[in-house]
Image 1 (spheres, rainbow, N blue to C red):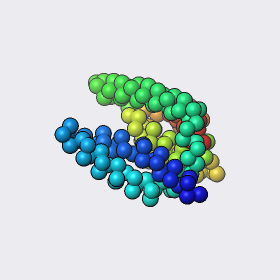
Image 2: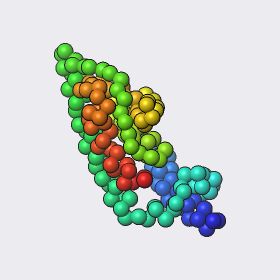
Image 3: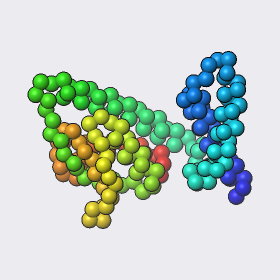
Length: 174
């Protein structure tokens, strides 16, 4: 058990240290000091949080998960670019063709991480914003504000908004 906790902490540290260096953006002359300080800080944080964040460290090295991560990133970037273009066209149009609505979108993800990743993916895509994660008639749903609602039918909304992300997230996290 203790060995798994240490492996999980090291894996988390390997993810957090590059993020620390990127976000602090140290000058070249301070790089070594920042890396050492970052490594110490990240290791302490990882030892505390790894048991909460990483349940099965052996899944970290699964090649299928790397495939799904790359598939998710590709899908997200494509949808992000499409949504930016679509919202820009709507905003720059003289008549501003908006049809806002709050729609319920069912999802089939099981893990909390998966649902959070789906909600963040939808929110980070321009034109949609997840307002709430709820349960309506014993179905798992996200309540989403959609800037141009093409439909209010649950399954059609899912097809237009979340279905693209769910498959990749399921492969990555579940």
